[in-house]
Image (cartoon, rainbow, N blue to C red; front, top):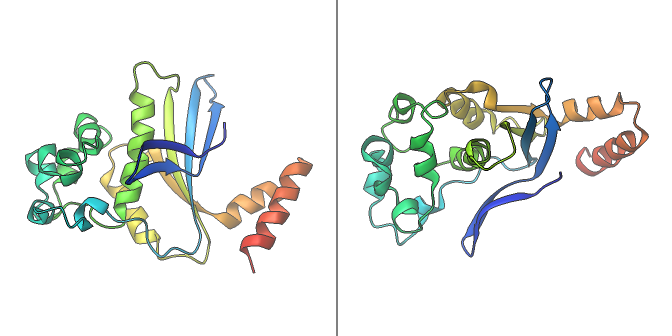
Length: 199
């Protein structure tokens, strides 16, 4: 399976992953790996609900009311009917309440918003009672020179209860693995990727 895999598609946008890889683990369980590819961006996408002029209650965001008092305090839940907070608050092992409530303001107002939404996509896939994937993981691959993304990724990793569900690695690690492969197609792809993104 190759991406993009898209969730909550609508006129306002969507949550997606750039690549989706289905595979079987050592126990023969079907798993899914979602990957977001970041190159020159200096941050992840911030919360559109917080920036939305129709959001008349930004003070709820500023005092982290969704995490502390319930999902109804989130503009994206009340006005847009997105299930971000419903999934978050239902999956306490993934999103421990004490971690969510630690910050004075909503932790997902800024750059962690994109990470949160894609992790929610993986969580929704994994916990779907009618789904076929035993586990779903999410990773970010970034250009090795782009270190501006590291604080958001580390903060998001620290917030999660299940640390192995999210990871990141640099694109040179991806290239090295492809170049060491015996697969000719993979080596051709690595050459194309290097010429396109490493100038």
